[in-house]
Length: 349
Image (cartoon, rainbow, N blue to C red; front, side):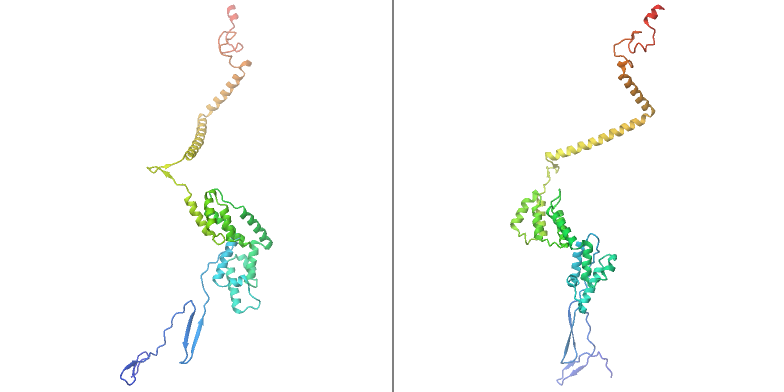
């Protein structure tokens, strides 16, 4: 009678007890993990072979694109990416001429990542470099210049760092971002500015409302070891507590001081005056357009009357009030303009 290979047979050792026979089916394979794993295989009863499998990390990194203005930030992200792939040493230090296969593989892997992060116009220039270190230095020279140009730019940024102050209405967070960006640009140009210098500069230029907080931080903190982020966070706490609170009455209405009321009145007067002048100007224009030709005639008549009144004493226009005509004795005109007959001629007739 035939039996299948997977059937377990019961065998005895003479004592009457039956023991199961080991199965002849092959053992099940397990999946291989990403970490280091030791896999052992048994060839015979007396020897064992240990196989060690080492896999390189395959982390999903995001490659930034280089532009004309973002080199400092681009260089920082690229350095972190190369460190994640464990190839930063070949970028920073380079490889020898007679490098082995592993070093050459790391160099080409770093070169591939570098070419993915630069514009296509630079591919032909960088791909011809022998090592990724040479290509990295070429990008640095193209974006921030050679050593002399970097020194000049660093001196200019140093002057800006020395004259850096708070702007009107600027918060501690906004100023912290400005000073951190300036420090990053200085480091990209080769100026190794320390965090202690940045922290001391921040505490020196704080506004008057935060001067007491700056003195407290200088007394109780070690400025050579404290981070800039921690100092900014502590100053933000003082800044929030220094803000004036709104005072309201029992009904919840806002109560202002005399200066606030005066500022509101001034703004309201300026608004009313600007609105009144605009309205009167528009009403005058509408009235002038409504008259038509009559408006032009009245203005011309007013001009003539003004001219006659200005020359009245010289013999034109109307005589002064109360004077009588020498010809007819009536009031309101001169004798040369009189249309009546002279008194003597009337008597003679």
